[in-house]
Image (cartoon, rainbow, N blue to C red; front, side):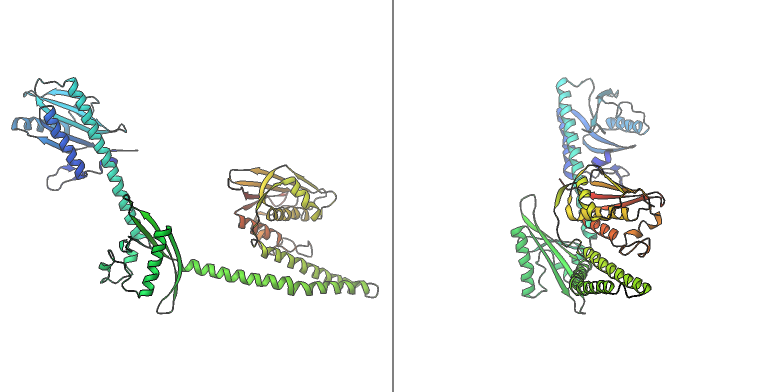
Length: 509
């Protein structure tokens, strides 16, 4: 809520005169003095002054005219009454008031109201007794009051601008980035403290007003100027560069230069140089990791799958040829080896699918949820007594990742269901930012303590001999959701059924 301090600032007590003062802009203070002088002329007044009421403090803002001993005595008495709160016609009056002081003088008091409805204070002047304000003088007084309020509102804007400048300087000072401004001659017109601190004290006086390249050789200086020229011509220059120190350490800096113009249309460039060593090191490490992952994917695709397929084929032939001559125990062991080979092949395929997530851009398309589930059902081993119901809904999503998520979640619900008549229900709700897809089953449920574990790679809640699975499916779901900015939640008591809720971001309009 606005108060007087928003317009004129906080009053201060003068230690020499013991009077309250406002730090008004000198130009505005002079204009208020001139208004007082104008009142003396227009209203044939002896003395005029303007007061500001800040909480319980009354501050003299401006005054003009001469005050003889007789009038001074009366004014002093008024001031004492005012301090005691006994003057009924000063600020509490919304309309102008006139009072006779009994000494041949009439006192005119007029409240000053700001456009916001806030009471600023009042204007008062003293003139000869018996001379009342005419209608024309009252109209002039209204204009002068408006002039006073305009000056006060203007001072509010000056205060706001000063605070804004102070805040910007404070932010610039405490920003660890190097911030500086250059003119069209490539000379510094501003530099913040972190930038200045890189120069020795003896050189700091030769920064502002200079190009600040005096300590560099001609080649390096020309590189700086080249980027300055690009920023002036194209509006922006962005450069990331490695800097090696004398001790052999490396730092990476990003320098952004942007053109701007002042209120007179004069162009400058704002330069921000920041240390991005940690970020660039991380990016480079990720690039190496991605390259290693690509190498692994290629090796797995060619050097591992081929011999594994051959092993599985040979084992199958041996099992067929020796089925009638091997003891039952040996034949069982042979089938176990074949199953382990099949499991290894399945795991390898899942790993390759997991590694490829995010490698290809997939555009969003319109999909009908019931049609999608119908298409993926033949890929699932659905028991005869199992029921899958889907509520109609239309979504705009990337086809392959979204199908993969639904395939894994519905497949898990079928695989882990322990009921004679299993049930999976798929439905969709739409919120402001997400499609909310619910996959609900009537299976054994998941204990809350396992909610995070089930999304980890290779994690299963049952042994692989008890229930076949690689433990990659839900990890694939999580990786796809992380890539597209989605999320997933689990709701289950660990006894009766589970609901997975997928939050998939809606396309931006």
